[in-house]
Length: 72
Image (cartoon, rainbow, N blue to C red; front, side, top):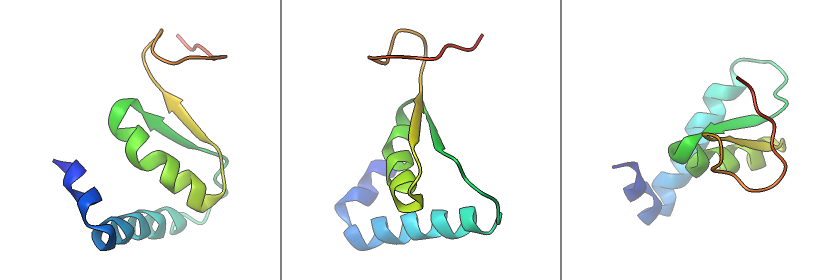
């Protein structure tokens, strides 16, 4: 269960730093971070904040409030 990492701030920070290190190795411009369903909503906003880009949640139709874009 990945949620246990939130009880250890040091481990949580280390995981975020590891993810960021791997992302930055791609050496490409990142326009946004897309999070898929529930698990993507846990770390996606944190990664987007660190990269200073928008976070875009993606869910099944009818699950998100507000203005949406639908792709079939």
